[in-house]
Image (tube, rainbow, N blue to C red; front, side):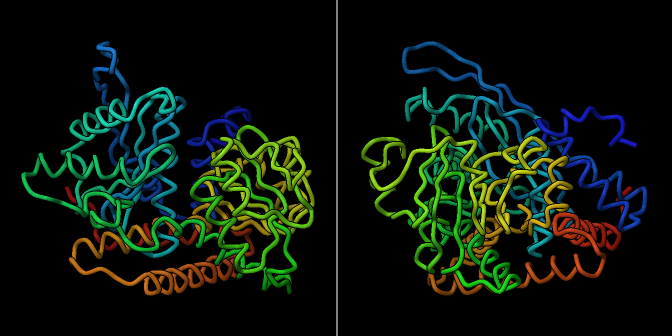
Length: 424
């Protein structure tokens, strides 16, 4: 068995191994056909490109980039592009697979893809980032497109990055193709409600989970790890709904106020100082210990492998809502299950982003754009229905929510493959 052959340390640090084990577990419970397992276990396509770029000082540097398409059985591949020094092919593989399952869980017609470039964005100028983005896009140009693979922003990329990709792709195609990416500026075919979508989705499923505990938002203390687009937006939206955000955890520290943080004031403080540390209305606490403070809701909304076998037994939350991709390791799952922590898995919890990306893609292709209240209403309908699908599957098969989400997703993707058949 793969579980026995793989050293446990790999399950804590290698997201691809973790994703593969969760796949195997769900496939076994579904009694999935061996042939379908082989098809779904491996990516459809993996592309590695080495891109030479001239830096501002005249030096030429070569950056390595990846694009992985995990599955296109239910529609075009869909997934972000991240710029970071620790990007690896295994990480991109795992993220592409998670996108396949995520799109299937919320039942939108996409498969899974992901991309990344190994670089340190904080050390690069905007013009250098533009040149990297455009050359990377040129190298993968034949493999992306509205009907094939639709990128989006991810770690250290944003709507400006998407505008560069859209423009570069359009120049190669000799006409403007807005639907090649999502997460674009509103003026270039972006969707209203897209910046808030992932954080809003986290809030929606958390509110559904609270109902199971007989709690109102006003009764819920919330700890959020990550104060960027996902965590920051979730904090802002949840505060407006009455949640008490007691702790924000960032890469350089954490701040805690048991009576609730003023999220807007904290955002302004970070804008002015560059850090959340030293916020006068809160106490600075250790960022590792902050995750272990008492709360009703814990939202890891930054990077992978935050909750591991080393700290899962000390988590004191009732509900764990995974705003990030892969924040909980495979080995931590059983610990949380034994502690009866109600986990809203990443492939459900943070699917608000890809759902509104789907809305953006639909709007671009139709050339007709929706009001923000339409976007938010349709997002809530999909997130609530998907939450009920996953929890219903969990109860029916007597498994925890993550396994239920994987089983539901595999079932839907496998069905598409079987109905389509294998082209030979």
